[in-house]
Image 1 (tube, rainbow, N blue to C red):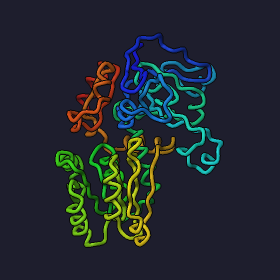
Image 2 (cartoon, rainbow, N blue to C red):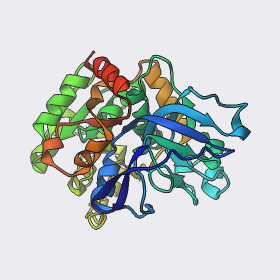
Image 3 (cartoon, rainbow, N blue to C red):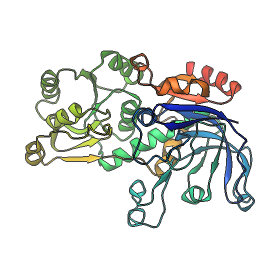
Image 4 (cartoon, rainbow, N blue to C red):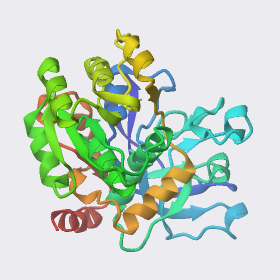
Length: 365
């Protein structure tokens, strides 16, 4: 089988190795689709504190059960279509007992501690199965769409933490895939007015094309002073109840404090690169507005289950986000930081030519 292995920062090798043996208490998955996450791009270019090298990256995974370990034959069957949740928590530590699995003291994840989805076959160990990472895919859902459930699950976690409420308004800073999913989810959660902000007009146009039927408008945030004036005018001086910072930019985190309403919430959804995470904030904005500033990291198996269900029921449309289908040999090009990829939303690695061609038709529809 073929796999792509990250040996070191900016060093990805293509290997051909034997298909791994299915453990007695685990599963062997034939990977059909693995979406490229912005975190994968960061890992390739800068590394990650949790990463154990060498490693097969990829944590937005969907495929087919190829083999079932002897101990699991009463639960799973070869041929079942599944999505694999990335998060593997211990279930026993303080945070797991508090139902905060993404804060697990012994947190493991595919693409970090276990080899991920940038390979034709992958092992799902027993610890992950006991955690509940295997979710079945509806027959009408493509593998590419199912792979995007992981990203939606993180958005679900974020809006739960932000305590999104009916009738609030929301500003989404960052018009990429995360922002678009946050917008669709906000609509489902009963948010009133939804605005998008980004420094790139092309991305705002893209958001308008995809989400224009339910968003109130878009704002260019390239000039902070002008941007804040527009927010003040739009909200009649009140600011936004919910501000989702869905980009990795310290400047966006800074200006978010000027855009949030009294008793509102800012969610720092996009983490900053190592060495650039020190941001100067006007904490008087927090003090006098009585607003909350929170962060979001990862998701849970429950979030993933809900995400797949929302996609299957048509509540969230991920198809417009799939802008590029590639094979494994093209993965490194997708991980290299480049302005040429700035108009792409989600790139998905596919492992079956037939599935790839069928998916192209589905995406174009």
